[in-house]
Image (cartoon, rainbow, N blue to C red; front, side):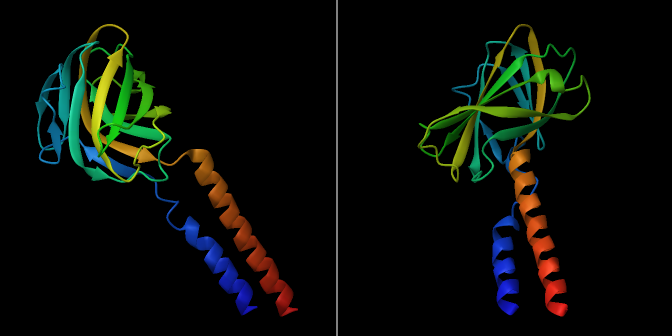
Length: 190
């Protein structure tokens, strides 16, 4: 019986970190986030907690931060922020660059999920990636916009979040292991 409990405990170990809801990639405030002026064409203003972008579609934004590790959280990004003024629902493309600055993961979403004038979050889905991308060494970001109209966007933070179906499957497997344990415990007591 002790062998079965030990086996179940070992099976549960890989799931213990999966329940984590998100991994912070970067906050867009100072001093942890540095705006890369040579690659940024949109207007910016930065404070301790955020960066605000003002301009039009076609202008870009780039920055760097301390290395982030998104291993196991690579399919969906969550961007926290706020649209100021009219929300035109532009497409937003975020490219994460690893420490080599030559490999990228590209994510696409829409600003339409942001309410005008109130903080919110939007999810961006993985569009493409370089096979050699170093998930444990994310170092920089490049943001561009598609569509038409003005951009007036406050960026607060960017998170990598686990894919919901993966989390659900692992939680279901964990529940199955618990049910098996309970069944075996009852059976051995008889």
